[in-house]
Each structure stands twice: as C-alpha cells, then as structure tokens.
Length: 497
Ligand code: CA
Image (cartoon, rainbow, N blue to C red; front, side):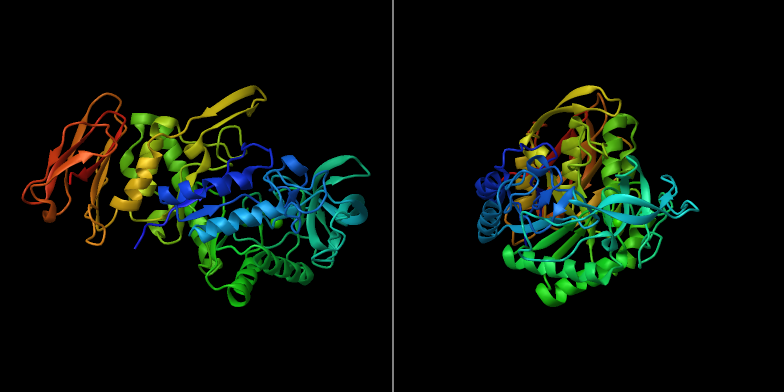
C-alpha cells in the first residue's frame, strides 16, 4: 500500500504565458519522486477573458486551446496539443490526473436575445419580483471560431436559469430567466441566500434535457480526447444535485467506472450541510474539507489562543475520512482571492503535518506552497497589495515522511490546548516506517508529551526528521517515549536506523 497524495498544480496567479502545461510536463518526474500520486489541473477550456482567463469564467467547453476565440488560440495555460501531451506524459509516469470541470455557468455569448425575466433579491433569491418583463441579454452562443466542430449544440436562453446583465437597459442585477423549465431556480440542498443556484455569468439550466445530454456528450468527447482519472467539480453547491447523480452515473456506466470524483462545496462553517449533500448525492463524490481548512486558518491567526484539541472539530475528515479531501489552502483562499482565508506561514508546517501524516483523509498540497507565488492585486478595501507566498521549505520532507514513514496504526494525543501529537506504529512492508508527531502553538516554551509508539520500538533511538529539535529520544520497554517540540514548532520523530 502507498499513501495517496494529490497536488493542486496551479494557483490563481501562475503566469499567463501559455507555458503552464509545459511546466507541468517538466515537473512530472519531480512530483513523482516527491510522492505525489495524482495532480489536479486547472480548467483547460477557453474562458471569457481569453489568454488571461483562469478557466472558471467558461466560454467554450470544447475549446481546449484549439480555436481562435476570445482573441486567442491558446489558453492561459497553453495549447490543446500541449495539454494532451503533458497529461499523456504524466499518466505514463504513473501520476493520476484530475481535470477541473466547471458546469455551473458560462459567459461571453456572441448574440443577444429578448428574454422574459423576473428580478431576484440578491440576498434572498427565492424572492422574485412580482412582474415579469423582457430584457435583451447575451444568451446565445455561436462559437464562430470553432464553427460547429465536435458539437453543434445550440446554447441559448432555454439553457440558462439566470443572468446578471440586461444589455438594453445597461443594468446589472440577478435576473431569473423564464422559460419552459420554470420561472424559478433549480432545487438545491441548502438555503444559503434563499437559493444559491445563481453564482455568476449565464447560469446553466440542467433541468433542460438537451443540456444534460450535451454535457454527457461533452465529457465523453473530453475523455476520448484526453483520458483522465478523476474530475474536480467546481461550485457544486450552486448546481442541481440531481444533475450530478445522473451525469456521474453516466460517466461510471458508459465511460470508466474508476473515475474518481471530488466536489467543491464551499461552506466552511456548517458541516451538516456538507453531510446532507454527500447523502443527497448518494456518496458519489468526495468533498474538499472546507471546515478543516477554516480550522487551520483560525489556528494560524489565533496562535496560542487557539485550542489545538479541537483542530478537527466539525471537520469532514472527522466524520467521513474516506470522503474528505483535506487541504491547507487553494487558489480561492489565497490572499486577495474571492474566498480569502489563508493559513499563516508559521502554522503551515503544522497544517501539512495534520493532513499528510495522519491516516484519515486524502490530502491535496497547494501549488503556491510547493513553488511559492509572488503577485500584486487589490485587497478587499481596494488597496494595492504585494503578496509573497514563500516556498514551504519543509514540504519535500513532509512528503518523504508521507511516502515512506507515516504508516500503520495511529494513536492520537489531541489532549492539550497548546500541544498535540500522535504516533504511527509503522508496517512491516515499509522498512523504517513509524513516527511520532508533535505540534505546538506555544509562543515561548519547549513542550513535551509521553506517547506510545509500540513495544516493537523498545530501546530504539528516535530523532526529529525535520531537524527542529536536536536531542534524540529513547523508547522505553513499554513502547513509550518522551517526545518534545520547540515553541510554535513541529517535530516528527523517526527511528534512527
Ligand atoms: Ca447554478
């Protein structure tokens, strides 16, 4: 058995030089040797902002950097050929690939239509204005650069539930589109903003059977064009869950039963809503553990005021270890981004130890922590900011520990406000495996904890693999050691020879 680890191979600010797919291909051997078993790549299709689009503002799902549309052939990340080439190489080297699938919305339509709408209250979308009226809106897509290649599906106002711009009035608001699928939003599993179906651009109407069929055709085309191992589903909380049930069943029945599924249901403070979604969709998808991310970020901000005993409180990984994709930060939570809530640098070794060295969860390492990221932008107050996310120096060592050492039965000592730890007993198949991990958020004192790692280590000497702590620890006859950790630090104790 090998520990599985995912890398998110992009951040919001990676260079828009069209060389990202090539960078990914070049990095494949390194990612492999670090112990990553899978990579999540950003959306590969053309976005409304062309060559600088991150891909989440979808324009044409069939344009993977192949057609001259939105003033560019390539995407931010490169060309279709480079994408296929990079994925082929990575998969041949044993790395699984998760593609990023954005099915909530699309934008950048070429033509306007006169459509019937009702205005929605932005804070409670279920409150629709009493009057039905007509507006002109960009709801008809023609994809002139692609000219019907791969699909001639007609995306028009029958395919959307809502839009945020009335072109004739020059007005921005949330307009609910009235068509044969209703004058309301699609049903969801929770009631944030009344009904949070509408997020941005033209919101896709999945009650339209033609849309459902087209999205099945598309994912089949995608798989046949560039085979992948998993899908990362964007913004699932804004999409009718019944669509995903049908669509994922189609994928597993008709394309590949092994396709792994990770949903992004962004809600960091309401675990029951995530659990309900998991059940509603019949456990067809894993979810990112946004609540754990929130705890990690809080712990980093509150420093020694944070009670580490509760670091997993209300997290998905505590309830569904098999369905939780744990992560420290991502392209949305990084500074200056829409869901900005990041983990401060001093706590990142702690956070990565918590997701990489324990048995529960499927961890995902963030690109910016692996490679660093420097960028500028405006903060929430509109002020210009320069951000520098440094390379997290301990990450390669953490990955080595995950790949070779962090195996076997786990005993937790989540028993002190400022110092928590756990041991892994190791497994015979992995020579040299087994470790004791200790985390501290204390600001000044070196702390210690007596932890059991198993009698099979009796008499053995352990040292801190991260070199944060110099004195070795000897295991007593009962399998206990008195492990220590410096103030605000992490130590991972491993057997010496
Ligand atoms: Ca939606």
